[in-house]
Length: 516
Image (cartoon, rainbow, N blue to C red; front, side, top):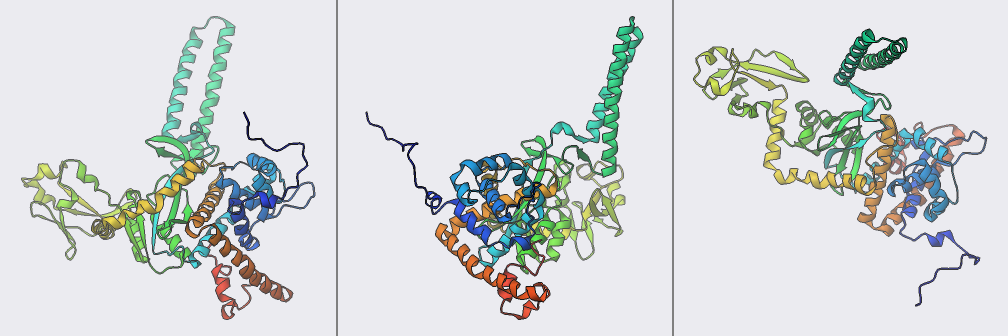
């Protein structure tokens, strides 16, 4: 039987690497994309060699990372190996073989530059009209950190360990009193000393926790927090916030830092609005983001929220919920189900992180026939109204009147997370510290947006746009820099607002800090 045969390994071959990389290869897209980035202005730092050799260009190492992250090659060791065996990477880096150490330091030292590059890319997409900024959806996903769960502590966990140690010490002390031989007493005394050392370690951790003012502390990565990954599975990680534009489902911005979404709405929405330079936009979020304070902030900044309403906490205790009390805005009073008026003194009270006003009519409650259905309090029913209740109710009304519009949120933002986590393996971070973790997030989102452009514009259409920018815009930019260099002026010193270069220059926001 005849079989298909391969080539003779001993035969001398004339090879062109350019011909071995297909025209629609991801490597070619990455090569064109990086060439249009003003890397120096974005703040990239070259990794200098300790042996005195010249550094690798930032553009080459950035190309390596963008190629690797898209193809689930993220560690510096694997990227180093790819430079030696992967034909596309060899073509992309023109045969360069940086060490794993230099690859790792480039990622570590350029966290801010990665962020600027992503925001620069978003501004470019806005100029291409692929991002409109009219409607964005905000959601979050969680990734594991480089910190084991056993190295994450809160006060309850510390107390549990200290109580266990105290119990063991008491047992050893009792055994020490009953010990007969000298050797046995020495052994038990050693165990007591070991337990006291452990207790002192936990005391030191408790002191660190008190000094931070946080509810938990991670020893390996201080910025990592204990988060619920999925289905009540708890691990130490990061809660990544992501904003996506509704036009073509492209990432707009990102952030991390909190364990949930409660306080993320207005910071993310305001950041997206400033970056996209729009006067007004709609923002779609799930109920995790529904917080009166942040909805009110958005409203005051021309951001219309469509955030899934939360039920009031009193609705599930079997008593009359807040919805059964009618509020009169003119008189600032509530009317209860028994037609009694509840008034307020106007004072504002702090209930946790919420500021509320109290409404009551305890005198009417004393003789009320419906009291058993309304309250279990001995003094009577007290109604609390958030100072942001009007914003909350207006948001609820918008969502209920536009259910189909609100459901666009899932279509806009959730499927990207499946691509990042399931297809590209971004379920954990390799870095420590918020800023470094976000460098991985920005790399991933740049890869996603670039890959998404292939679906929107096609390979040839995207390559044509990138080539056009590389040939025209950057040449103009470099020309003006050359003209200004003899005068020792920067582009910010030059009155660029009054020149024909204004459109191109503003397109890249080189005279702005909106992408910083």
